[in-house]
Image 1 (cartoon, rainbow, N blue to C red):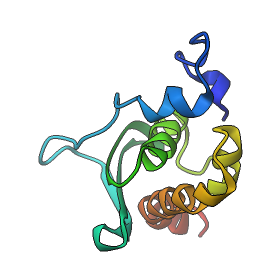
Image 2: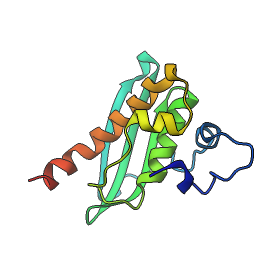
Image 3: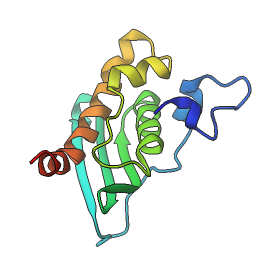
Length: 135
C-alpha cells in the first residue's frame, strides 16, 4: 500500500501530503443499519485530534471505508490515505504503520503523532476481526 496507488497521486506539482489532505472522498458515515460495519475510535476532541473509522466488511474483505475526524489537515491526510489503501483489501492484510504513512506523506517529524492517532483508530476497528482470524 503506497501513495502511488492513488488516482490523485499524479497531480502535477502536488506533494503527497497536499493530495491526501484535500481528499474527502471517504469522509463521513455509512447510512444507519448498514450491514457488516465495524468501528474504532482514537484520540479526543479535547486533546485536539479525534478519529473514527468505519469499515464495511463482507466475507472478510473491506468493501468500503468511511472516517470522521476532528483535528488538523495532517489527520485528514492520514485518514484519507488509509481509507483509500484499505478499501478492497482483506481485513487481515497488513497495513503500514502510522510512522510509515507519515513518511510517505512527507510529514514533518513533529506531526507524526497525528498519523499514530489515525493508526490507533484503524487498529480499534480491525481488532475484533483480527482476534477472530487468529484463532
